[in-house]
Amino acid sequence: MCRNDRCHGSGTLFDHDNFPLTWPEHAEASFAQDAYYLASSASASVIVYAFPSTGAFVVEDRVGGSGSMVQFFGSDWNTRNPASAGAAPSSFKGFWSSPGSPITCGGRFGAGPGNSDKPLSAVPTYMGTIVTSEVVKNGSSITGTRLRLVVVRTTQFDASPGRGGSGVVVADIACT
Image (cartoon, rainbow, N blue to C red; front, side):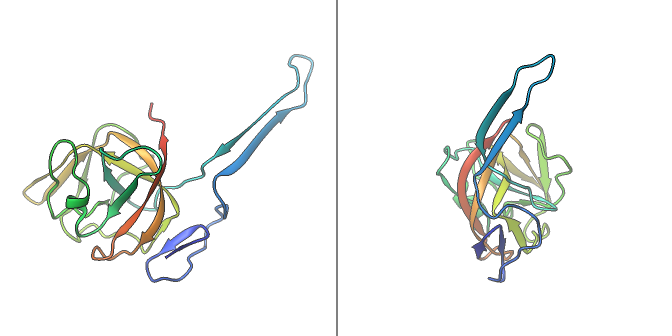
C-alpha cells in the first residue's frame, strides 16, 4: 500500500522520514546581488527520491521512458523483466541486498538466489532503481550489469516475492 511518502508491505502507512509529502517539488534559488555579481534567480520542478535504506531494486534495460510500468521485485521478476542480453535466472527476485553507497552506474552487481536477499518491509514512494541489461547465475552467485539508474514511483510493494513490487518510471538519473 502506498500513501503519502512511503509504501509499506503490511498495508499500513509507514511515515517515519521527513520526506516531502508531494512530488514533484518546486525548487527556487535566488541571489540578491553583491559588489561582483548581479541579482539572479531560478526555479524548477524537481523529483525528490531515495534509495531504500539498505539494498537496491533492479529493472531490465528495455524499460521505456517516463510513464513505463515496471516490476522491480517479485517471484516472477525474470519473466516480467526480459533483459536485452537474455532471460534472467528464475531465482533472481529483483533485489540486491548490499549495493554499497553511493549507488552508481557502471560495473556489476551481485545478489543471492531466491529469498536469500530479503528486502525491507517499506520502500520510498519515489525510489532510485538500477537498470540492468544482463542477469546471470553461476552456481549460487547471481550477477548483473548496472547500466543506468531510474526513479520509480512505487504503486505497490510487499516484501513477500509472491506479492512483489511495481511502479512507474518517472525519471532517469544522470550518470557521470
